[in-house]
Length: 160
Image (cartoon, rainbow, N blue to C red; front, side, top):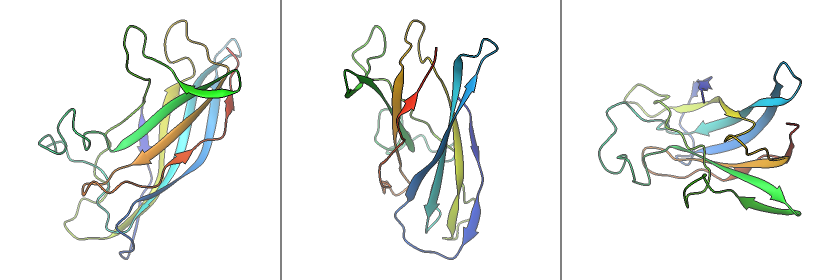
């Protein structure tokens, strides 16, 4: 999974981050089957405290804490017309594509950041798992642990 960002800076607005789904692009392999998804999420944060530094490893940003991941990405499949999470094989954990991304505003001054983030996710998340209809649920968390709104992608039909 790779992340890429675009970023603009403007005057300070709301300290609460806001996100929205821009698009989901499906890429096919050489056999014409879906192999990779790219989720494009737009973001805006009035005080610019989105992202974590390499040194952000102490509470509340340590592994296992609520602030460890700053991009939460849930994965749902549609089975018998019902959306449900899937379990990680051999575990009782649900499949997530949570991420840590780097600071977007490197200065000590509060300033708005906005832009787009692209997240690459395999169309088949595990060997032998080939869902035909999926969607993603996402949220961002800033360094003050403010949570953005929660957004859902449209349903995505896959061909494996």
